[in-house]
Image 1 (cartoon, rainbow, N blue to C red):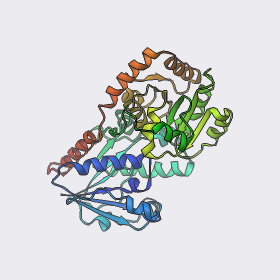
Image 2: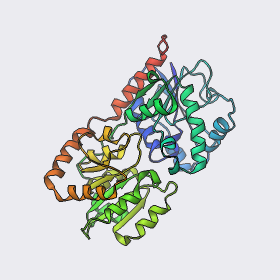
Image 3: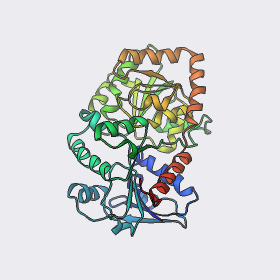
Image 4: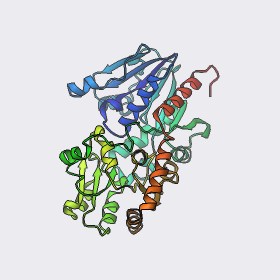
Length: 382
């Protein structure tokens, strides 16, 4: 069977859904399969080095097609202008098409469709989005969910949101958890602390870490204010994440603490494990997450975690993290202080965190994805 996969997010986005797509698809292509995969991406406008580096692993059963227009133009044609140009014009005939990034392109009527929806934050927290982006998502995501033959959600919480907010039939939505790469582990690389100090100016003093795009949903303003209540003058707060949107208040709050709060911007994927490993604590007080992969990455690196008790995070963190109300700044400060002051508690959290993170692998996710492919391609339809 011929299966098309939209790899555009992996080609264009270094973090977030881009990294999700890269890891899941690469793990999928390593599995033995009777299927032929056609992997395509809109790569127009990418610099030459990134154009050369984007492609999925080439194998006999994998075909890669690059589309020489940008993802923005593709979205305009397919989702704003609703040009009825089926994806098969790019991929050739297909039996199944999979989109890992919220929306489906037009497809031929006979092509089965599978869609991943990572979260419905644009419906739960529209005030945390640029209005134009929110309006776009409110139009195209429900339309794509309604068209899809099967929808994959990042968590049981996101599945419940799809059912409650979009009226998606429960039998149409399945949960597919993300995985943690093997490089996120407690064993340090040689010279990694020195690299962190040289490249990012952190590591000489103990630091609390948080990871994620700078945007209101990540709740960084409350995190910075909670950090400001901690008494240790040597302690630092390090936030790693590319600028997203509506982040000016985060920068203004950070400036109040001079050299105690470090906002690093985007951190190269290769440096993330070291950044996790050398933290004394990982804090993740997000208001809403479809999954919350940084929580598991921190746990896999042997770092105790304090995170929000909202949305999918209790589901992902299990009993390994200390959960807090993300709206309670004082409670967040108290939770961080409690973990930092209690060595026995920290060690117990680290042990539980390693066990929790070990349950989530990309191989397991890819195996489940392939099973969904096989289900959709059986003669008996869902």
